[in-house]
Each structure stands twice: as structure tokens, then as C-alpha cells.
Length: 140
Image 1 (cartoon, rainbow, N blue to C red):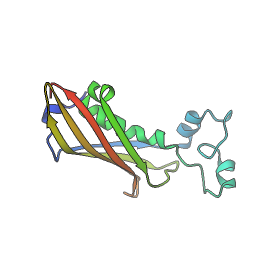
Image 2: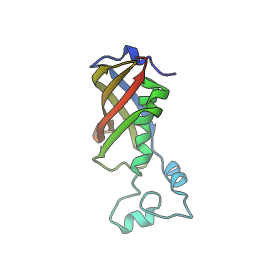
Image 3: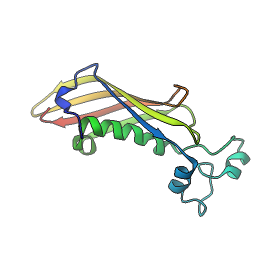
Image 4: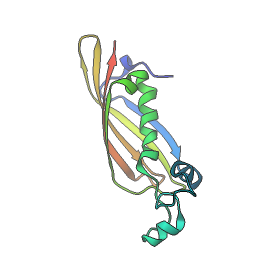
């Protein structure tokens, strides 16, 4: 269930939202064995100099989507902008944890526009992605 966006003030923290990345999930997402690429196949990844397959960024970005949906509900799905920069590779076995902090809230006619700084950390607490979301919450 979504938190009430009306409770979110500048400085409010969102998350954490955890998502474990497994090779099985990566293979399913990539339609392995029909598709063999650096995101799901050991041989392909090693041929490119990688120690193992790397997770496709859209897979672990879901942690941010889940976190924002919990905070803003359907408004997040209908009126949002999300921009993420991917900084480090995510590997099978990594646990990605999304975090967020409201950095802006501007009330308008019947809605509030929120700016949320978002980031994802791996199990070593290294930032693997960071960015910003803008959400318009009706009636907030």
C-alpha cells in the first residue's frame, strides 16, 4: 500500500527496497537459452573479459520503481520522470537496495510536484546507480 504523499516533506527518506539478483532471474529475463549474451551466459561474459554475466540495468532499476510506487502509489505510474545513471556492474548474487530522499516539494493547484534523489547500492554498500525522480501527486 502506498504511503500518503501528503506526509512527504523535504528530507523524508524512502526505502529501503531490496532486490536480490540471481542468475536464474537474469536468464529468465533474457530468454536464455534462446538468447545468449553477456547478461545471462557465462561463456559469452567470459569471452568479453567479464568474470561472470552482468545484470541488465533495467532489471535492478525495478527496486527504485517499487520504492517510488510504495511512496506515491498510482500517481508514480501516471505522472513521473525518472532518470538514472548506472555507475557499476551488478552481478548474480548481488542484493540491490534502493534508497530515496525527497529534495523538493512544490504545491500547486490540486497537486504537489516532488523531486526525489534516488540511488541503488549493492551488498558492499557501493552506489551502482543514482539519479532523480519527479512525481506529481494529485491532491497532495
